[in-house]
Image (cartoon, rainbow, N blue to C red; front, side, top):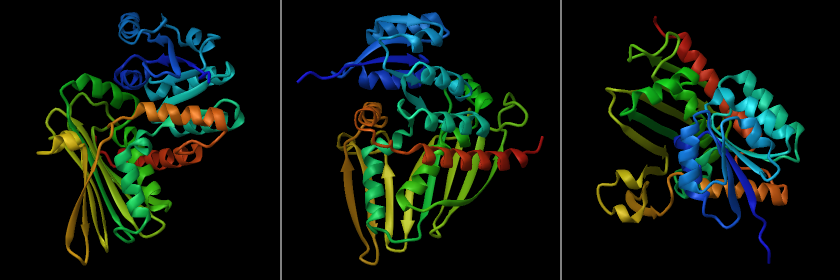
Length: 338
């Protein structure tokens, strides 16, 4: 049987671009045709490392090439709408990094464009939907393992070793929007409920963060089934790194410890700690999975192309989570003291 090979063009040779190619460049069903970055040296480095056939500094040339079937957009959010538009005009399928845009207007335009071009399949990179640990947790909660309603505690703070990298991202988006879209989506995904209300607080703790922006934020959410959740995100030279993912209900608790944070049994992968109540017993579930399974994500896009199946999440779910993240961000920025 002849396997179809998909020609890939990567736009954006940064850390997320590398995360995509690390997991796919040697797959049998893809060929890296082009890597593109405004920094030519970055593009050349990627071409050497991932054996890309050519480099470009103009994304228009990359997305118009006849041998390219799929474009991976791994640039800052403010450029997503422009690049996606060019991809769809050239009949390309797209895997676009989250957040879908840097503002709600662009996000809604992108969603409309995607719906108006159904022949071009577009997958937005909500990588946790393809993470086996989160898939297991979703399955457990949906099957009633901890009951409902639930409390969802989610923290992802970064003690930055490369402050300029994070500062550049803050100028384009915010900590709450950048990864908050993931965790708003998880709240919806694991419960099956809709977000009904968000709020938040935040602060500038670094002097070079632009006015009207912040590097620490805390967002809270209420859901239609009575569940609640929060997402805390801080990027700073002084904050301590912290990663908490915990789901608590009337019948128990589920807590995720990533493989890299385990104090022992590191080789077992991620750990799910499941506390059952009223039994008052503990169960440990080990999940061997990649933290960023970009290859599985690309395979989902290929499945969409070949079967016309919807993506996970759907574009409506992407826009819903993005809309609530933007709303929380607006509330936080409105409460900043300058």
